[in-house]
Structures are given as C-alpha cells and as structure tokens.
Image 1 (tube, rainbow, N blue to C red):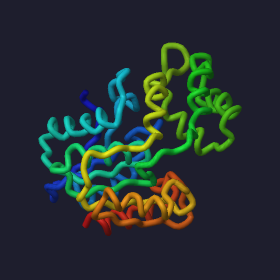
Image 2: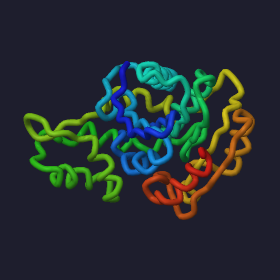
Image 3: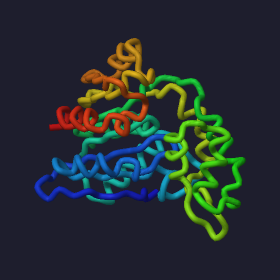
Image 4: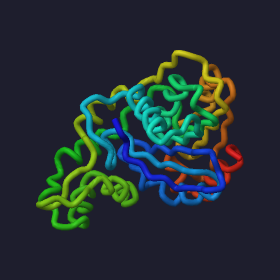
Length: 255
C-alpha cells in the first residue's frame, strides 16, 4: 500500500524523520511541528492506512502498518530514518522497531506504552456511524451534531478534520468500519519478537496518564536503551498542547 505523505525538505541534511499520527488523525495535524523540525532534518509526515488521504483496506494491524512505512521508505529510497509516532502511531513505530530494527536511527514514542488500554473511543465510533453528515450543509452543522456526543470543542474540531465535502453535504475520509474492527487489537498488548536496542525516547504528557511509572519499568524490559521525558501540564496531545516544550525535547534527543 502506498501511503499518502508530505515531505518537508532540508537541503543541508541527508537524514530523515518520519512522523505518524494517532487514531482519527492525519498528517495535517503535524504540519506546524514538521515545518519547525525541518530546520534540522528532512521531515516526512504520513497518513496511515484508513486515515487521511491514504488508501482504505479491510485489513488493519500494527504489523501491516509498520510494513506500510517500510514500503514508503523503499519508494522514497530512504534506507534508514528516525521516526516519531503518537498514540496509535506510537504502537505502529514500536512494531516497526521490532520488524525493521536495521532501518531505524532513533525512535520517539509519544504518550503511549505497549500495554493494554481500556476502551475510550466508543462514543466517537458511534458518532461517526450515526451522524448523518450528508445532511449537514456546513461544518457548523456537523459540529452541532457532534456536540450531542462530545462537549469538548477541541476534540470535536480534531474529529471534524476527518470530514470532506461530498456531492451532498459531507462524507468521512476515514474507513470507520475497518478501524473499529481493528480497535480491540489497537488497544491490546503489543507483542515483540525481539528485545529492542534502538535508542528510544518515550515522550509523554504528565497529565495524560497513558504512561505510568510502572509502565516505564515494564518498557525497559523490552527497550534496553530507553529514555523518558514528561512534559508538565500536558495531556495526551502533547505536541499540540505544549508545542514549544515538545519541540525542544525532540531536538535535544535527535540532535
């Protein structure tokens, strides 16, 4: 599968950094951060399968998504790169480190551990399936419909990025049925074939709760060269909530 992607070039660098979004996200979510980081390195943002403008498929697994990334690297003729993955994308890049360790320089996992999580997105799946977006004449109409399910306007705006104009009203860009079928595996424990020796930064929001002190101990059993950096007053969307602190932590780790 050929993933939709965007390159932020740096003519002075021969190195590359790939960025993978989380559940219901897309490469546009990372535009500002990618632009800033391209002052140091070539940056490639990616839409994972069934998200954004990448192809849809009924098949979805972290192994497939990791191999999608390896294929994209082949197509771009990039042998090795550093990678950032947030949330679902963080699990994808951890699986990439397991399957393709020779293609990694450094790894940054953002606010996710390879453990099992409790379901937390059921309402969003229901919203995507039940809201009649085709009947919405504007994004404001769609926002009003979503507000019955999600009161946080920031979350609604994030979810509404998955809409695109259709012949009648709006339609979803994401493959909701495939993502929902994958969801139980997405939030389950991530299993590894090998011990991961890639230098890895686990960057998390201290208000998030996605990575605990116990998780750090467990992570170090698999990731033997792991560092942990917590961002103060940040939740799960660390890069959006505290972009300056996030940027500084990434630059300090990579360069």
